[in-house]
Amino acid sequence: MGREKRRYDAEFKASVAFEAIRGRESVEDLSKRYGLHPSLIHAWRKRVLDSASMLMAKSGLSGAEAEALREKEREVERLSAENRWLQLVVQRMTVEQRRDAVEMENPTIPVLRQVKLLNINRSGIYYRMKRRATSASEEARQPMAVSAMEG
Image (cartoon, rainbow, N blue to C red; front, side, top):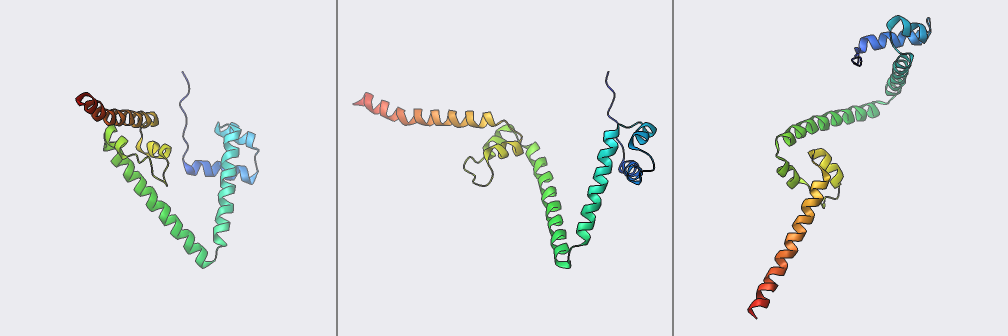
């Protein structure tokens, strides 16, 4: 059928990208030699050049700015670790428990984001709300019907 997608390690990508940057051979020649599509080599080359400019920008930071950047990077790492942990916890929950965890009135996390994080369908949440509202209105009407029958 179709070819399996090939994966290349970072060292190989960097090596090919540096050869493209040096310009001793054209990208077309490199693509023939390595059996790669030219657009892939162009993408790797662009990524290396973009990374280099970011490195230079980081090195130009003052001490306080560099420390603030490092602090933000640590915070991102911490939040990523917490997110991975929460995803494991959510996987262990039943669908019913996940549906119960949705907070319709949460001002900071919209329902759409909550259901995505909880890995449940949004339609099930709205169906459940409608069903609860219907049963609540039926319960509210029943005492009146009973008292009307008594009178």
